[in-house]
Length: 364
Ligand SMILES: [Zn+2]
Image (cartoon, rainbow, N blue to C red; front, side):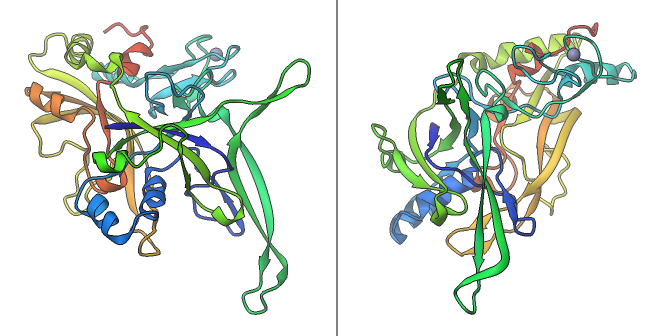
């Protein structure tokens, strides 16, 4: 596995179909866009060798201000909540906590769970941000710039009256210091990639490889500088067995089996033909609880020049019980479900985030 570090050099515009003449970007670099940008630079034989006969997978890269950090930026799961009045993770904000384990414990006791602010105990709302996004929470690093241009008449090849397109891309945020001096806030996108060595060696890690990704590339958008390095799992992720043990003790102290959470680092695409309701259907594990959201997995097939098939995809957290510790070991940082070559279904077991940010007010 490799870690991909992306520096934007122009505004970036990804995903999201246009609404009329208006189109805005997703807040991350989709792995499929990276894959497409690299594939388009290869000749047909190299493409077949690296992408069809071998596994070359790029996962989504999420925004962060500090690429050196030894944790991976990723979406907060849907169980993350923040204060309704002072939302966010900034200095004056009331912070973020996770409700997954607390709401499971309430569910077991048949009690109604009400999420509250970690600081003032007032009501809470769900939090949309990036874990390890930097000083703040990732999404607040992003600034959006809007460009409008005139449509060209296809018939007459001249500007057409009343035909304007607006494109909203991601750029670095600019902050002013006390003296009014403006400075760009550092912005990177960091994600994982599962690549054959030959492909990894094509990257220029000294200066960064220049690639063009996303939409509007002919109109001054999409240039990025990419470096990759071998991925060493953060220390906090490594002691998997201990984390599972702690979780089992916390949630079901008398259980002879192992309890573990399974989080989607990238959305999981269920197979519509087998009708699977959760990622471990048919495996020796019992689903106890889940908290998920669905979104559409869609995209553009660069080689075919056609839209790809769209699927519903699921992101969030699942809690399982199993008698098989080998299963837990095998699942950590593995991929499940459909569309794996496009980077879907990357999983992490017992994300330490859930226990670290839980409420601690619920008596287990
Ligand atoms: Zn509060």
